[in-house]
Image 1 (cartoon, helix red, strand yellow):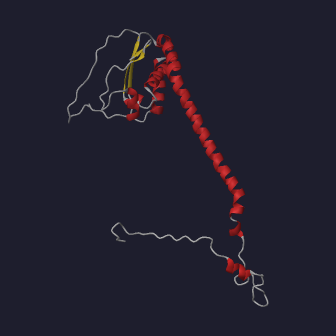
Image 2 (cartoon, rainbow, N blue to C red; image 1 turned 180 degrees about the vertical axis):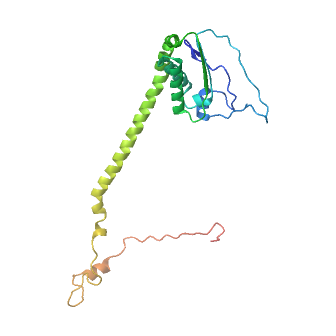
Image 3 (cartoon, rainbow, N blue to C red; image 1 turned 135 degrees about the vertical axis):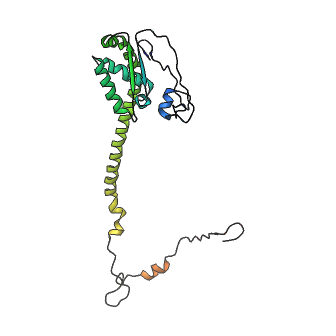
Length: 230
């Protein structure tokens, strides 16, 4: 139910396996535990209210409100299309279009407005819509907008990182692969005299003989278990 002064009110409890918190149910999508069925017991719930015009009564399946960001957004959906309409048909078509755009399920809605024609209702509910936008919808939409911009900025930074990495690798690569690019000398020719076949580099053998490892580390790995079984 929508009241022009106090806004939306849930007047019937959802038969769900949850604590019936409307916002939490948008996240959890709780399972129904009371369904009309020929195989199991069920009950029909009702609530009697005394209402004073003007008001708007809404009966809707979860396909209508289960895919909006919050219960406040569902109220905003109803009232914003009322403000943008000049007839009942235009109001209905605007709601149909918006629900179809977000619904991931079958959606059915019945709406009864009491207290005046569309022009009168639009005037009566305009202050409520403005309060709804400034207090609830605007702050959430601002965060959503920042999230979209942040995600876009993150994508741009990822692309810049890929390009920069490629650019720096191109600069770094020649030194990194310098020995891979060099052609090795022909086998049996390095350091040998072409006429005698002897090494022509003075002290070469002495240098080779003098090269010794600066450290030798032996690592023994015992693969047996505690009982000595390999």
